[in-house]
Image (spheres, rainbow, N blue to C red):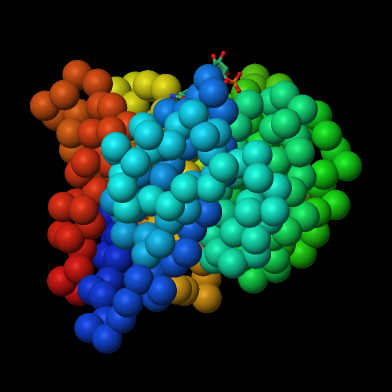
Length: 281
Ligand SMILES: NC(=O)C1=CN([C@@H]2O[C@H](COP(=O)(O)OP(=O)(O)OC[C@H]3O[C@@H](n4cnc5c(N)ncnc54)[C@H](O)[C@@H]3O)[C@@H](O)[C@H]2O)[C@@H](O)CC1
Ligand SMILES: Nc1ncnc2c1ncn2[C@@H]1O[C@H](COP(=O)(O)OP(=O)(O)O)[C@@H](O)[C@H]1O
Ligand SMILES: [Mg+2]
């Protein structure tokens, strides 16, 4: 297993070409945030914007509109109950994040199905939080993932739900077997996160710690992964995912030297300065 270190950031984060515009740095669609969990999708959206995504649209409950725009006026808003608007937005984006705070009720299943139906092969589909739990309970939805570039970002309980492997039995070989069956990249989040790649290799994240154990920390990671995939165009996109995962925890580790706990919003607020350190190579 490859042990990730700071080199991955030097490899992936590059200065921006002078002749460029927002269209070069990724169109992202974030989908989630019901009445109860608006914060989750706002964190994902804000993280994508602060990590450099060119254009970010957020499909969420209309109840979250004011909060969303007060935090990130850069984001565009779509009412996630508007099926047509959501499917049109899904068709037009480079990266879709679905699941943070989506919930697991019937309307949530319908929103997820609409997104999966309308996503395309050349897009990246980051499936997180509630969307993972929904897929585990609605196996018929898996047919919409065939031949698509899917990245699952489960924590250990979500991985248990979707893989059927109990947390106590989640060892490398067992995890890899199930991940390969899914034909997707799996970012298994925990103390020392492991990223299982499509080609059967895996990367270990040796940084990060309990100062990150705050609700919304994983929601924030989805936005960073989306922004990295949207703007750093490498053939081997799994390295881009590795870099995003490393970046998230590296910021947290740095802040933890002066903060007892690190909040998701602290990480979001530090992204721009942190990434600037890696643009000299
Ligand atoms: N501010 C917000 O709106 C927030 C919304 N959230 C959303 O709430 C929904 C439910 O997600 P949850 O993860 O809270 O609930 P889940 O029920 O999916 O999982 C949480 C449970 O898993 C257990 N667990 C075991 N191993 C774990 C590990 N390595 N990491 C994390 N938990 C582990 C925890 O003890 C906890 O009981 C998701 O859609 C999520 O995006 C959460 O992200 C919390 C913050
Ligand atoms: N003790 C820990 N050590 C290292 N990383 C942690 C620890 N606790 C939480 N994290 C990280 O925080 C994030 C939590 O993700 P998740 O449980 O999905 O949060 P949420 O759904 O509340 O946003 C993951 O990236 C995980 O690796
Ligand atoms: Mg989560």
